[in-house]
Length: 64
Image 1 (tube, rainbow, N blue to C red):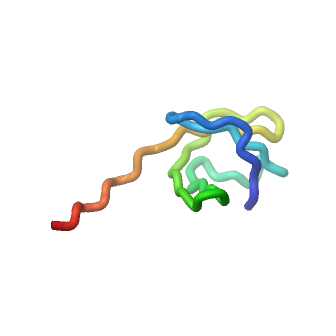
Image 2: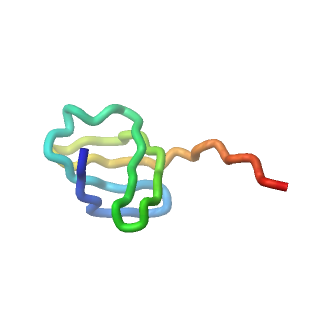
C-alpha cells in the first residue's frame, strides 16, 4: 500500500493513507526515496493520517 510521509523524526512519522482501516497495528515502512526500511507500530489515527512510532529491529550479528 502506498502512503505519503507528512512528518518524520528519529522516533516516528506521520503518514497519510487512502484508507486507514487496512493498516495493521505493526508493519514495515519502506521509503521510496532511499529504500530504507523501518519497523513501525501505529500510535494514533486521525481520519486518513496515522502516527507511527519506529520500533527497534533486532540487530544483525556483526561479521568478523
